[in-house]
Length: 98
Image 1: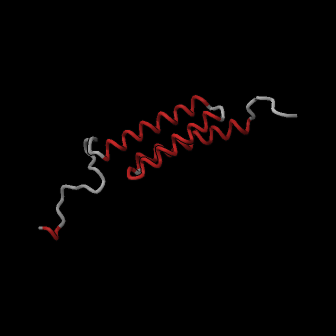
Image 2: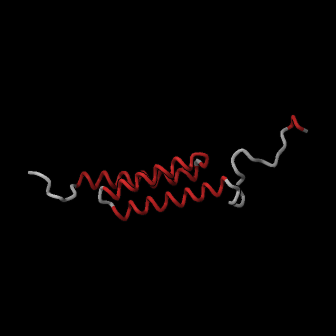
Image 3: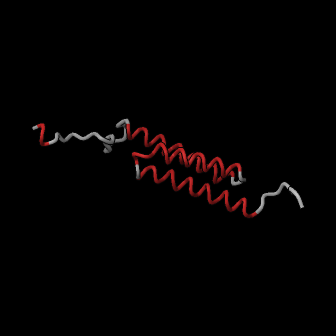
């Protein structure tokens, strides 16, 4: 008994579960654009935990997807994405001001 230095199946499964959850949270940031920073940050953290637990490729993919979603979300907030208005902005004037 003792530490054999190997990666057990439960550790690898837990790492895969975290990284897939990180990718899903990052992609949810595209849908829920107002929470993109929080969801992308969680994706980065979970992807990093996946790398630490031994799932390198999937963990790096989770971090990359999360950073790309974060950049997209920040661009959408700044009004740089064509066809998307920044949250809270519209060209319509409320009826009470007309």
